[in-house]
Length: 165
Image (cartoon, rainbow, N blue to C red):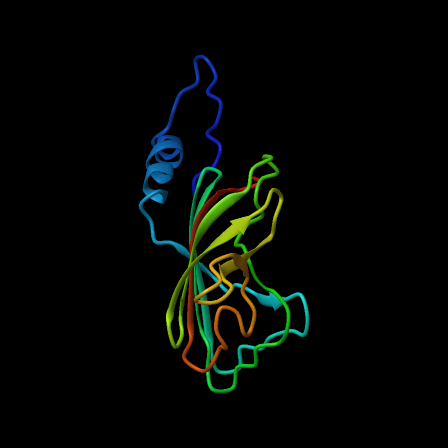
């Protein structure tokens, strides 16, 4: 991962190791593999449980810019809880006075396109979808919105935001 570059001193003798660390390694980190993490799936009501489903998170952090993808597939023993769903971010968002918007896709009985919002200083994000096929206002995703979840449903979240540090 990239980090803050060092401050050079006049007359300093630069070694190959220092050049590699300050230039090569930082440059290479921008083309390295993404970092895996396990997002936490929570709700504002009774907690959901993944059971034999899967949830995978991957992200790349370049400076304070975070590019992230979460992919969750429910299983036959997943339970969906109650309330509005949230998913943990890999790193805390900056308190920059701005909210960031990303994309959300639910592949269930139907395919639903929605969005996520990351608020300033947030540590999690929530997907929003149309309330129904005829009510196109958006609201938080729940066990029954935009459709009743069942085994094999896939949720995909993709977003970019500024990290706190």
